[in-house]
Image (cartoon, rainbow, N blue to C red; front, side, top):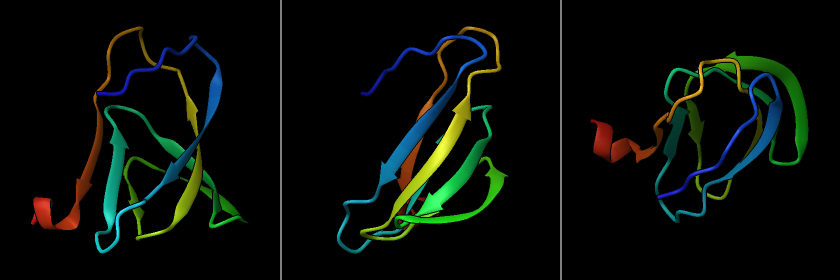
Length: 84
């Protein structure tokens, strides 16, 4: 279980790393959009998404803006095999 606090209106940089050997992972924070700004140490044209797909060994940097009411939001990491 991972918890982190956020201040309303602030934007946070999340570095998400898939350390799994053979599994692509999905990452999501309920109700929030993530703005992807970097993949594997290379800047990309930023885009918004609600779910990230991260390949084995891949790193993704995404911005999270705390723009929803103060509450607890589920963070989900799941492999492709668990979803299908």
